Image 1 (cartoon, helix red, strand yellow):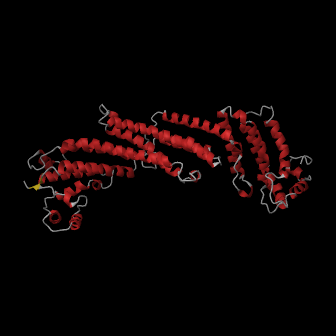
Image 2 (image 1 turned 90 degrees about the vertical axis):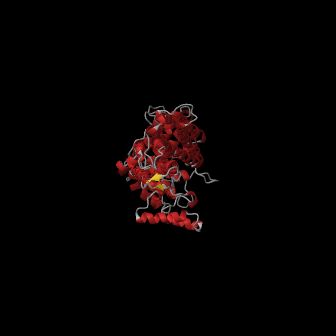
Image 3 (image 1 turned 180 degrees about the vertical axis):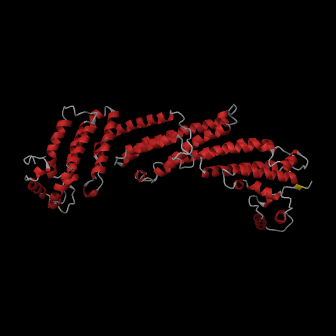
Length: 533
């Protein structure tokens, strides 16, 4: 090729003996079963370009700088682009004619002939790069970008279309990998602490476009997810599955565990402040809406990271590094830990809502004159829709569930309400309905109060009465039977509950279910007495 004055312009090449020289150099492989990694003809084509590369990037010239690896890499990319058309239009027909059965791509063969000079330069710099981990990380990032550009811009692959592993994997020896891993570990923890030190990092941002899960994300969750995915891109070039697995365990799993531990500490602190054994009184930070918001901030972090974890565990990239013996995912333990923490926080939210609302119900549950027709209860029943003792209770519902509606999905709110409804159901049933007899006015007042309660919940949950079955069924039993249809239902209930009737247990259950009584077993059910005064 030197004799042909290569490299030169295409029009001059066409006038030389390049064609005959290329065919002669290629014909030696016509009967070969295997081809060398780099064909001699492309070695010859690349030789003068390699000499120029060494002059600029391996000598003492100013262009040979350890801290500017991109200069050498960009030079090779420029060569690939400069001769891409020549390889496709002029060399490709010659190559296809000389080796028709091989399916070789001239531009790819040319690039593969250029790559050894890049690999050699980088390997020669290894000892110095290991002394500066930051520069090592930077160099690997630039090499990765170089590999990506080769794949994306030139479609570079190995022969027969197989995946090209890239220059990055050739320079990642065990020593280089360990040094790079340590550097990335330090970087990820620095970024983590920078995220956690941010202002209002756990404050939930309601109604964001990112809010596709059960609860809107807070900045900490969003940034941890971004950092996790950035680290994924960082080690994407790793073809060695053991290296990829170690990278995941050392950096990404550690990141997930550290973030979870932070939220666990906050959850523990909340429990300590609200526990009766804390030795002090709960502060305003953990009472009412403030306490609810605090718990929701914790739930936001856990829930949103867990949601993405469920996506990552099914990603083919991570499936490839599942444990080969047990086939367990590399994130199975984290999914379990995050799931348990999510359930714990949801339970704390339900307990918090229950404690706050039960406290507001205290005066209401202490009323004892439900049987009187001339009491304050009876007066309210005649002139008002609700008992005054419930005003604060209704306000608390609107306050706390109003907040939940801005940050949580209807699915999450419904799940929380189902558990809360059961708590309220038990309080009202045990403290009021089972302990009292009712006049018609008392029964009417209780019904009005409960209906108002459900109406207050209704903007936030569908069919709130479904969460309070014992109370709902008791309201039906508290009817005075004036309505003919109600009277018929009550007669069926009386028969089902009458121990003197010779009915099987299953028959009693069927009769009660037909009357709408499905929650309580016959032996545990009684009909609240209506005192006709």
